[in-house]
Length: 285
Image 1 (cartoon, one colour):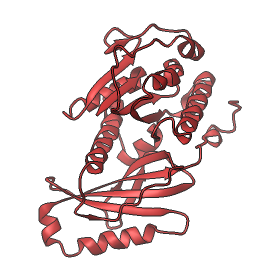
Image 2 (image 1 turned 135 degrees about the horizontal axis):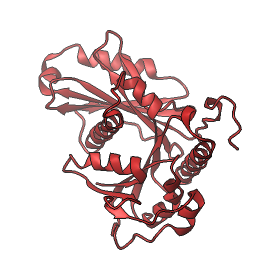
Image 3 (image 1 turned 90 degrees about the vertical axis):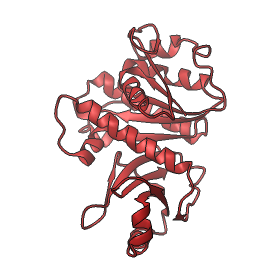
């Protein structure tokens, strides 16, 4: 699989994927140490207008691709131009939303524009889907994080979750009832289920609204799969509790070599997500 990061945040997350042998990674930024260095532009509009042709450097056709971008930075203005150059591939956008409460007005506007356009791009089927991730929600799932290594910790959580879900999607479950999400549901968020508390708790990386489909991926070692007679009942009860007339729920159980049990999850919506209400009623239009 190919991972392409655009901008500083995108490059850092792409680089974090390189620890796994299954990925070929590219970072696109204006700094010399980037894998692909492009000219620095003065604003969002200039990146859109003058984004370079990278087809010779990204010779990709019929590949599975993650494109990772954070919307607040100027370079995110080149997102659509980059996606147009990757149109012959199965591309999923991983969109990183920063802390809106401490952004400048320009950053908020850029965040709004990029987020909305990329979600519409996904809804139209021009990319496979967009996975929304909020740094604020992600931090809540992790808990206290030290200042040194703060973003590295967030990035590793994103990478590890996406990697394991990618592994499961390309594996055969021991048991499961996967339901294909609606073709209209292309806006997604990922998360984890804490299986080690008395009550299993979902922790989502983005507060997705109007959810239509949810899929749970359980990773459980062979010993527990063979010897824990309570597992199926626990999983079945959890899944049944999530089912209602508005949401399709499915799951798969996969054999792992890890000592601990894991559960990763993804939810889908067909509605463009809005964050305007989160910005203290400031005018960002």
